[in-house]
Length: 398
Image (tube, rainbow, N blue to C red):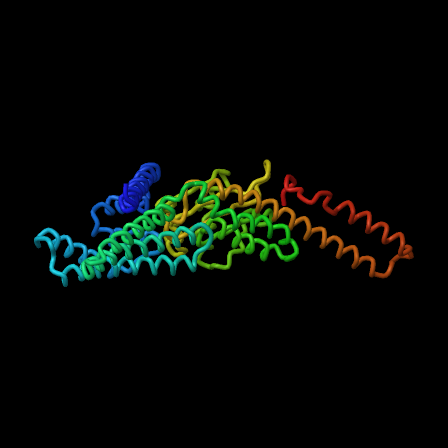
């Protein structure tokens, strides 16, 4: 077996593997992104359909202008007509046009994936980067075909480079569209560790709103989600209180009508996690609120310790392709860490408040003839009784 044959065999086997993984994903979770992934795998065998199918996948992840999609459809139709109607070999100028169509849209997809990766975080960034690299490799493979036509004397070199590019494309697409669970976990681990490490220092912020917003950013990075919100139960207001700075998210989080729960308030009431790829359809009563917030896909889990209901953690985005099945499990793990961090923060803030009150009372002059020492002893004993006895007393609630 020659090196060229080995590369070709590996590439074909890899694309078949990606196709099988995409089929399993589409059957288990029939999202548009998964269905398009199957179509893309079949399109790899069809050849010229790849640029258009890749643009559809790009649209599932980050969105593509309709004009670009229509232009790709026209290019695909024209290419198929030329390949069917005109006898091989094609004229050189026509071959160059077909290569330009293929390479141009592949390059466009690669640039868009890279650009979106820069504005993403966590596992989503790494998946987009892998797909961008795969698109670049595939474009290079087609470019090698053009060079083969222009310089046939170096056919051996162009063929070898094309096979290497195809193999690189297959590996990159496999990592981007169907990453193994272990690899996905490895991609998520740095952000998860960063969240756990930073949680210990959050109480020093002093303000519960700042702490919640910082935790939201850490959870969003760990999940690779565009938006994350944390709601805490407020005994006084008898409802969930959110500290999110985005005004568009408020309407989708808490309903204006007490008899109609949103997805988030339903999770708190039932203590059951929810993941939906079409929030406006799942909760039709608040469909417009989800659309205005850009929350088509919503993942929400309860924040609970023992029997104490503390709040809800929710992540959402305009497209379901940013989430995977096991993200619900990871979100629950993160929610448990959020509960610990918030519990510690509330205890520390309360302890600081009590200590400040004690100091203020010590500075106050004694009244009614009582000795200052007696007063200090009285206030110190009272403060000791009211101060927290443990660093993590979450079972007592807020």
